[in-house]
Length: 308
Ligand code: FUB
Image (cartoon, rainbow, N blue to C red; front, side, top):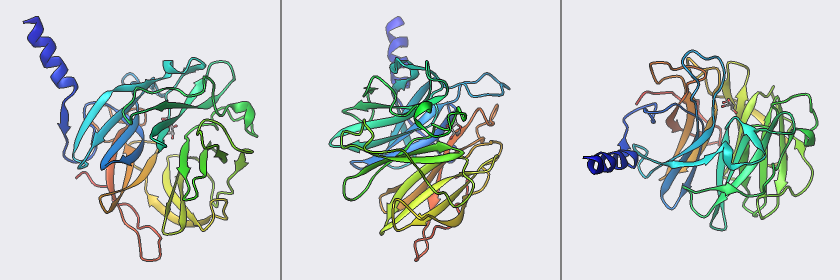
């Protein structure tokens, strides 16, 4: 009997979960999505909201990983990265992004630093998109004492990593101020000074950088509760031209963190909202996916949120 129970548990743990409609993950609260396409598979990386019911604040200790080859059936991979994997960190597994370079996968994460007051950015590495990941440096790549306004304790969050066509990698991040810096080809060290992005509107957080047909796109959250907006430029260093709102308030949730990917000839906007009931809300968020559509001039149509 014990054997059959264990067998059943392992089947359930590795099960491919067919989901229909938003939110796409229905058995856990997932937040701050980032996604990457590798060899015909979408890998979705999220934070994990585990705050007690009605608690007003984030409780997040690990990041989660899911994969899908049709955006309908999602497979959860055993929790591949936890705050405890960074010996220099205290807690708060906030927003993150994974990128592939030279057959290695680099996972940039925001965490509370244990000894330097404020949030920091770490990077973990793996030979597989599903892990296991390990701390790539043994120290943070960005800490609060490296950026200009050391009085903002949470400005070193929300890393977004981008590799340009010439192979130069960039790390963007921030809250209130949007920062960016070049990364060395090893992806674990900065290659030059930390610079400020001249964002054309007020900036809250959650930058995401992508490129399409020679245009750089910087999408990010503004205001609070948040909306996602975007700007375009012909140069990664700007100037950035404001182009409008991408996604309205995500409903029942103060934040609106997003990712943008192309997959099998279509573009997608991946974000979180407070749609998974009961107990949904700003600290119990859920990842959703909707279509992203471009106009012929490269501007983007406003995302229509669906429950489909
Ligand atoms: O999940 C914690 C924080 O909330 C993220 O870092 C922000 O982008 C917001 O979603």
